[in-house]
Amino acid sequence: MRTCTLVLVSAALVGVMAAGTVVRAELKKGKITGHDLMVPITVDSAKLANGMTVRHTHQKGFTTGNEPGNPFDGACQDCFFSDVLAADGSVVSSTAHCQGVDRDGDTWSVVTGAKEGTWVFVGGTGKFKGIEGGGTYKIDKEWPDGRALGSWEGSIK
Image 1 (cartoon, rainbow, N blue to C red):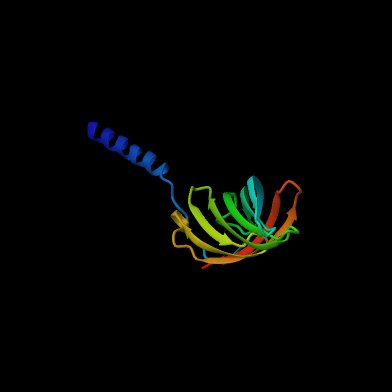
Image 2 (cartoon, rainbow, N blue to C red):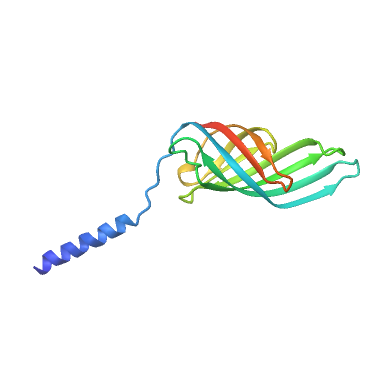
């Protein structure tokens, strides 16, 4: 009886430990689409002698994915933009680096232009380790306070 009890307790402990283990889903390759809502956290700028301005912006936001199982649905991200503006305020050049974290705590990084254009994966952890691919995005709506809603599409290779 004592041996039977020990076996049952051991089996129960193994079951509890296994239930607490996080199982990471594999990253599905293929087309992905979604939206981002971004909010500016900090904006710093410096006027240059030639009349141009250099602006650095840090934005925080979240991502929604349109497809079932889209790995970016419900993820959060931080984006860091560097813009050069002409004297009239138009964008001369712009780049951004975004870092995201999904619901499992896995991260990815992309680089992109800051307004409308293309983006490409440059790294990741967990299910995003070794990720490759990229796509395009556009700004659908901008508010006067700097918030922006964008849509994106691309692929995971």
